[in-house]
Image 1 (cartoon, rainbow, N blue to C red):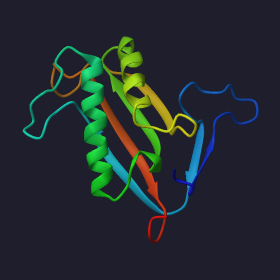
Image 2 (image 1 turned 180 degrees about the horizontal axis):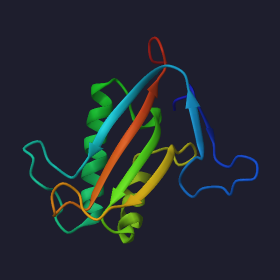
Image 3 (image 1 turned 180 degrees about the vertical axis):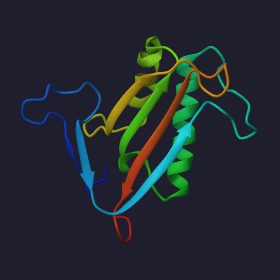
Length: 137
């Protein structure tokens, strides 16, 4: 578990979030991960028509991107979800809950968009992370 981050689930006067923190901060090296979609290593769509399968692939792609920076999901401070239909959010949240620490969730935003860059894509997720300075504990 990453202890270089502080999570505030419900600041005074703000209703607690479900599955996210309202505020997360830390010090260290900032990492921005571009929006990831359900594409495999060859650029083929994974899980066409299945929001859950797409979300699981998106989180796998995020895991790989975080690892390239020496980070993991415990270092994520913010996730932004872009979905073509808010009805996909339960499937996205289920996939998220497989990879994040539910006791220390990142800040999050969800946005319904009219389309993503390919019509068969249902979900795109971007991430921001903070790695502690120096060697990992």
